[in-house]
Image 1: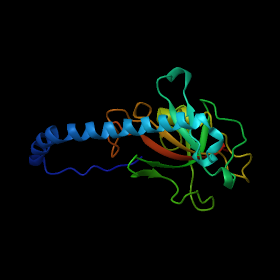
Image 2 (image 1 turned 90 degrees about the vertical axis):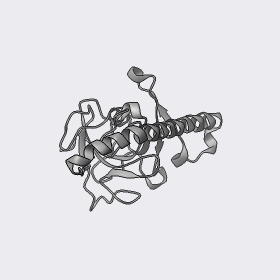
Image 3 (image 1 turned 180 degrees about the vertical axis):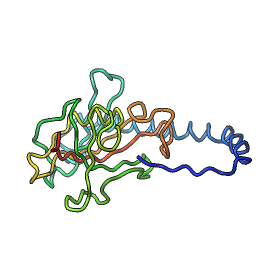
Image 4 (image 1 turned 60 degrees about the horizontal axis):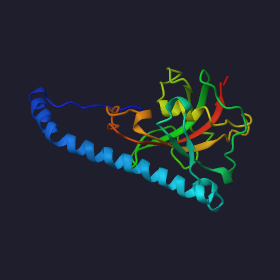
Length: 205
């Protein structure tokens, strides 16, 4: 997730810092409130669907993952593209495996901050997938956040390299399982991250 910081001249830094002290705190508080309200709305929608799950289309059904070791931090997700064949049937990844994925990452306001495909679905002939260690340690490109580590262990890859259409999830990752209060690069602190992830392979050759 790349970002570039462009610094002003040194004499302006003190003025900028003073301005940030006055303005950033309220802005951060507002953003934090918006993100947790968004998570509350997901939880409410999930609870509503549990009353009559058969009335919800598969692409709109909200699922819940609560890792045993992170019982306070629920991850909500949807299964995208089911009607188009995105249903993985391979074995789920383990903590020590490498996952090959397509992904897009957005904030709750729709801002895209990272992606390796540009359309609704990946173009398997043109788009280049990325490899990540499920554990979050550095793989071929970079490490991953805790929310990814958890969700990748429940996703299933495609049956084979010819099929390619493994699970395609939209995952809502709360700040505590992403970049927390500090944020990262262009991603502000307390940001809930929304990822569309398509798992192609586990431990690709």
